[in-house]
Amino acid sequence: MNTESIADGAYTVRAYQQLQDGSRSDAAARSFSVDSGYQLPTPVVTGIDAANNRLLPVVTGTGVPGAIVSVLINGVANESAIASDGTWSVTTVRGGVVGSNELTVRQRERSGQGVSAASAPTSFELVAPDIAVDVSGAEPALVVTAIPGSSVTVTDGNGFTHRLTDARAVNRIRIVDNGASGSSASTRAVSVVYTGDGGRRAGAPAVKQLEF
Image 1 (cartoon, rainbow, N blue to C red):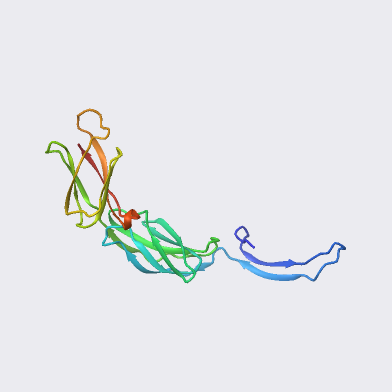
Image 2: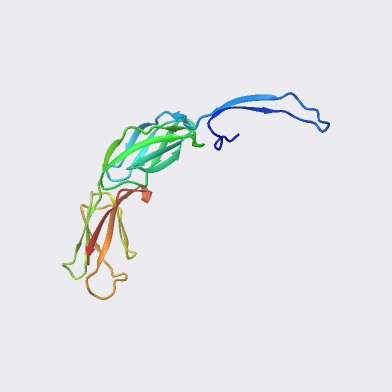
């Protein structure tokens, strides 16, 4: 029986069988109650892995088996089902910003009837590579300053994408004109972000308006 649309309260369900001649069996009864305000326990966080502050975190913990856990980064939800053994892992993909971030966790029943309070907030930092443009040479170049050995993705609003899979402390990327009209200077929004796990994880992007 789906109780999602039933108002809170106590109920009794009775059922019987009726034959074609009109005779029927004794009724069987079952009582139940609906409480949409039922409170689940707050899930427990056992790990927050932000890859040394470069990537949005993978958050692990325990909760009610079969429930849905929500990891909120600055109030933005990232969700997953809790396994039958009560463990969960959420690879967060949204909500993070460069600088200080706040993480809370809560869980709810799949029916939506039972919810938990949010956990106490946990703060963590996210960093991003730095980017500048160097127009001193014959061809302009992007200069990316990053943590050595990290993976970095650079994009702009004109379809340009460049990936560094083993970044040095300072990296130069030659810029190829991909649509800017004429030879006059132009300004583009350029985004630079740390990535990981073969591109399946990313950090918080830094976006700068650069003049070429």
